Image: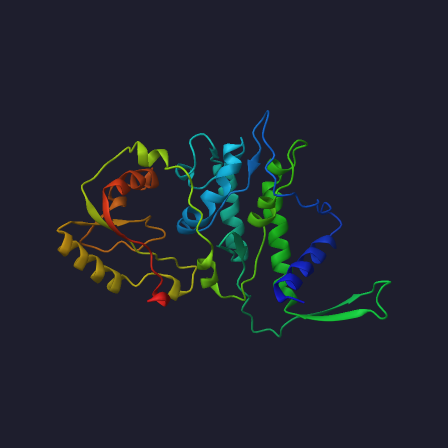
Length: 302
């Protein structure tokens, strides 16, 4: 059996063992159900900005065009009027991520294997079916990690339950995808290989900027403490390229990014110099003046 499929099966089994959990609902089809009355809400995408732009906005756009709305950490990226900002929800989600050490990986969540000096926990599972000549017995190692994943999924879905448990709201594939834990064999770079789906629109903050700037070379340097070091940018190398390009084009360099997730080198102008309020909205307006942009390049990729 595929290792990822087996882990998913065991998580479902572990969650079903708790008597106070509601039974799992059947999965929805891919057909988009149009909205006729009150808006139906999709779960948020809580991962990296790059993955959201590259592989999520274009996929979810047909739903939003059909009347659905979506919880959004970055509402400025979505078609006007389709994003819902719920600060209380995202504060609780942030606390939940911190509690379990979870990170968004691609379209799903990922919980790194727990590092512990204790011996790996082992559990046995017996599956008996009338069609089988004899029961199947599985010895599962690191059951502690599976329990963590199951508990995190349950708490995450409980957090979204007020939006999900409406009589007129069907279950969708997005509910499963965006509210699940996945396991890429602990290899984080696999999240970079998602297919590109280009949305049909440009954000209103790009079309109608609240701030503008002169033509420039844009640079974003990723720096996230919760990730492995090789997923962050190599500032020295990227800035060397940026300075060479800026000198050739005779343009200034503008550093993009939020102070909490980006490296902001001294001696250069930053988009965050004016403060972080409405930062993404301002940056989307600045993008119209970018002549060359160096995106966050992981140190492990160069």
